[in-house]
Length: 70
Image (tube, rainbow, N blue to C red):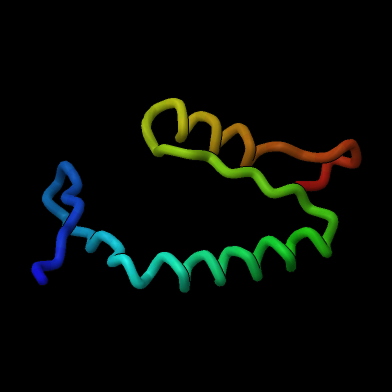
């Protein structure tokens, strides 16, 4: 099977995940979410990395709680 890539505007290639990688990544994310929830942190998912996705990720990353803590 030929490996598929995503190519950035400057020509850098990034391998696309293969089907068998999804279950492993889901397991990793599930463990990370559980860890963060124990710390009383909220989990936010930003879909897409277009302009709106990047803007939303920046806003979320810059948020603080009532005590000014990230």
